Image (cartoon, rainbow, N blue to C red; front, top):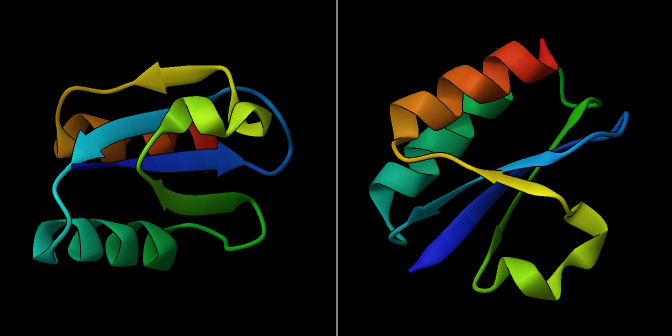
Length: 76
């Protein structure tokens, strides 16, 4: 398991979702990066969000679709 974190480079909280490594994670990251301006969003994959305090606070999402929608709403 891992966590995909979306951080707004302009500040604010980060969005996060727990996922499995693999194709679904890669496709989600590619889709988000192609849909959003690269300067405003930083995507990273981590094993423990608590180790990355500079990205706190985290708002955890339940599904990849919900995560993608919230990222688009927050960063576009």
